[in-house]
Length: 203
Ligand code: UP5
Ligand code: MG
Image 1 (tube, rainbow, N blue to C red):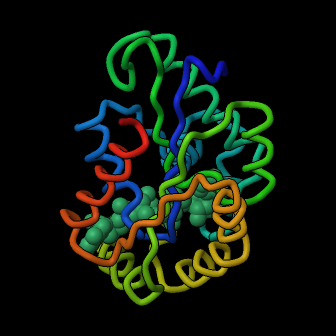
Image 2 (image 1 turned 90 degrees about the horizontal axis):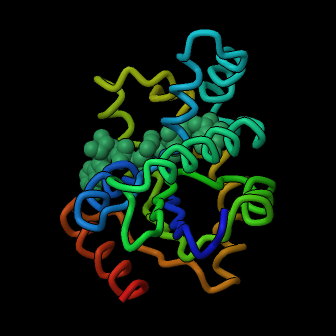
């Protein structure tokens, strides 16, 4: 994608950090198109006729990262669909503005997306403790129906986050792109910080 036609913000943070919650509110106030890599993978998993359904289910349950070709293809398709609409969600001054939530979470994905799709302008990093994350995911697991919101899968997701995703955050930190936000406080407090960061960068 042409960097002049798109603006991309990556939204990262541990499982349950509040990425989806904050993105949903940011979309409202800043007119972004919100693409959650996890949601796109779950939709593909459930799509009739998908050749990747079983594979995606296994990776998600194990808390490991689905091979990057699949996820990048889903993101590219979703970005192209949004851009082809040329209006509505995510369109501001003739540019498509994307919040890409939960991606890239492994170095190979980061390098590939930067090289072959487009460069991000900013990485928002929601940071908190595993204790807070575990509390939120366990609570959500009572009603979410997500196959990875159980104690076993949560432990594996934490491990993958430390081993695979922290290096990505460090990689973008070294490029000066990361805005770290403490996501332990209330949703409203975290949101206030998020809007400040976005206003700073796009002022
Ligand atoms: N909540 C949120 N903020 C709160 C706050 N400030 N105070 C109190 N409660 C708060 O929030 C989680 C819960 O916490 C909710 O109940 C919320 O109300 C509450 P949410 O906004 O859903 O957090 P989020 O960070 O989005 O958590 P999520 O579980 O979606 O994070 P994951 O990163 O684990 O999930 P994702 O869907 O991104 O990925 C799932 C799996 O897909 C991965 O494990 C992996 O297997 C696979 N995947 C890939 O393989 N490749 C990819 O590129 C992406 C995903
Ligand atoms: Mg999410």
